[in-house]
Image 1 (spheres, one colour):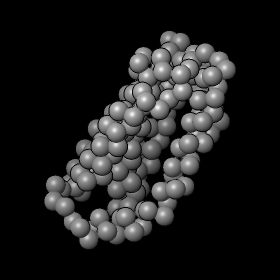
Image 2 (cartoon, rainbow, N blue to C red; image 1 turned 120 degrees about the vertical axis):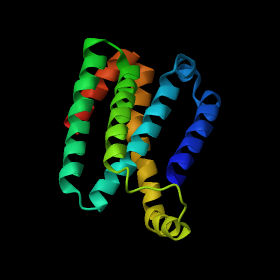
Image 3 (cartoon, rainbow, N blue to C red; image 1 turned 90 degrees about the vertical axis):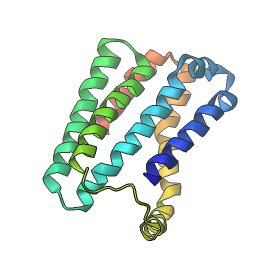
Length: 173
């Protein structure tokens, strides 16, 4: 619950900051919903990662593998449908991430429903932060590198073209 609340708080902060920080060429995308959609899809994806990681940590290998494979296949199928067939461009990439993220969040939360409680454990929080904080800079820069090509391509091409590029890029990953 702490991590979900923390992620939601940062998403709200970024939603508030986005209109004030983006360059003039991207202000229409903030108003048009692309940037908020990106932030919401990232939030839902990060929420879904918690129960998926729990499956892995608890040794539930089959469930972990099944959910991970389903997420990958669903993301490919939905992104292809939304971006390529419906011509939704970059917004379609984030829409597909949001849709698949919500479905995987529901499935993985149901599979791990007995693993979580609403009680805070400060010892567990301290252990998680001690383990996870050294990884934070690498995670942050990975996100910056992963999204920076879309930003620069968005300045040189249409959002529909950037969306098609993103589909090809994700398939290559």
